[in-house]
Image 1 (cartoon, rainbow, N blue to C red):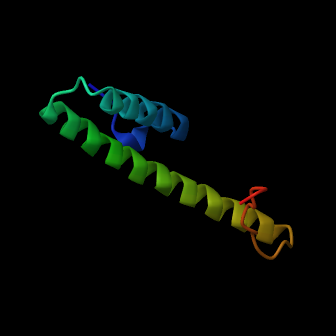
Image 2: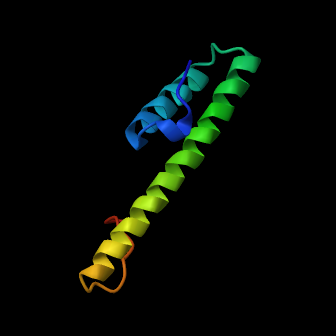
Image 3: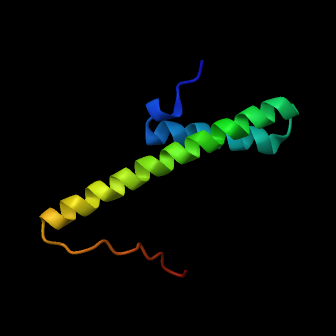
Length: 79
């Protein structure tokens, strides 16, 4: 039985999401299985987003403790 999304690390969730996407893109999955995988993927995404938000809050608190005012958005060159 698969672990609950909340019990997976961020990296484990990402790895499982990549597998789900690959399986769904391949197209050899029955409709019922595709729906189950899609539902699992949504749960993994939501949980991962929560973990990222928590990490961002921790970074903001740590930076505030160091006297840095705010986080600045990451600017990818060329975007």
